[in-house]
Length: 545
Image (cartoon, rainbow, N blue to C red; front, side, top):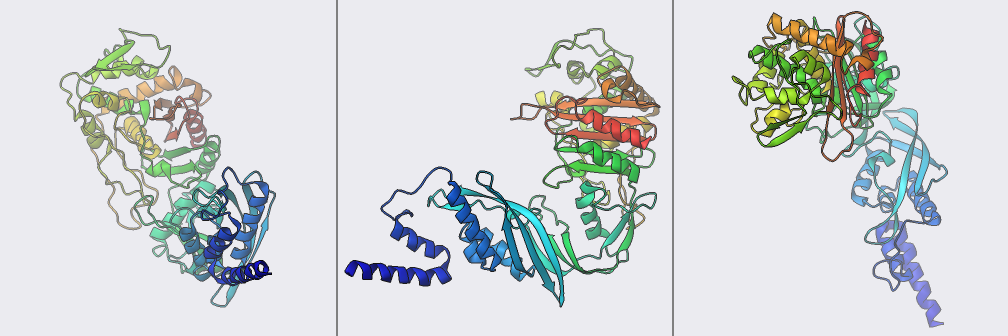
């Protein structure tokens, strides 16, 4: 009889604690049942079983539906962060009447759909979306727990993000292309982050009025810059202001389609005679505008700048000597060419350029009058790179070609070492190479806000003429020929492959021109330049012609 009374008392305590304590309630029942660290039974290990996955997800969903943020968070492996975001879900985003419908689990992964209502200022709108969660074994408790990710609450949320419903920080914009066509995220998906940034920067200047919306507020922690809100749902429409951009609807459509072929790919197209950006597209899960803000090694596309430096400093010329041995040693480090490249000690610069011979450039990089800073000076003074002064209309990285000594001096010359670029930079490099004039790329006219575009002195006419001809030969006879095959008109290109530490496959780079369009693309872990990035650039040039 005494045993029965004791059990009833413990059961009563459990019932009270469960109603108001969340995680603490579990600790009590764990101690009684022996499932926790303080119990007599060893904590469970290994992946959660089907029953645990179902029970944990159901408990999490039930608490979330009731708006019990702390209780729902207690079923995750990061109660602090989960609790903060789930609290904001109701208190800051004003989302209520939540109904969650789980789908069929696949292993430890549970898909689910959410239907809810956003209510603010007397206005309500339905909200629906789908997301997914995974259940894992808690490392310290052995409990089955929801593996916490912000995307559990909404698929577009990332670390540091939160949800807010309020009057929008900036009026909406109607971004239009150079022909007046409206550019929307629905039609051009990868433009979403770009349009958000344009709205943040130019919303007021475009002449619109703000509305009320549910939005993702980004922390900006990943980039160190203030990030534009991402609207999810409009409760009260504002009046959109019209913002004219330099984008070409046709070229943008081709760029969007082309990058979908490969994950982690980015492309930019510019008009060489003006610097106007015709297209910018990315295919990335993280939404990062790598086309404008990426900072990675560009591989042998860098040889355009290196060749310009060699010509400008009188080291050699297009038809001058640039021997291509099997290997070259620079300050005790040995550099080689791609597999199966035939050595040619009598090669000209044009021949070594079109075959992308690394050793030819390595051997010439140490010739008089070149110094450790010669490549840096060429990049800065001729091509406008590495000065942190581009003003494109949205955040961008302007390239980096640091002055270095030793083996990195040679590595920089072939687009490895410490050189960092993105497709915007390399499209601009091509534009400067074929026109001889540096024109800073831009997406929004500087006339709108009076900003000063970057300046550089460009190239001597003779250097530009030689670079353009070498790129023509590369597109018609060299490493870029397969990708550029079938393109008519005046064409030229340069391929590049950049090795990345810890990755078995190199990054694929390609830059080229056709008529009045220059474009560059990067595919991370895409292999040789012509394999992945080449077809992307060719597709964009075809549309731009």
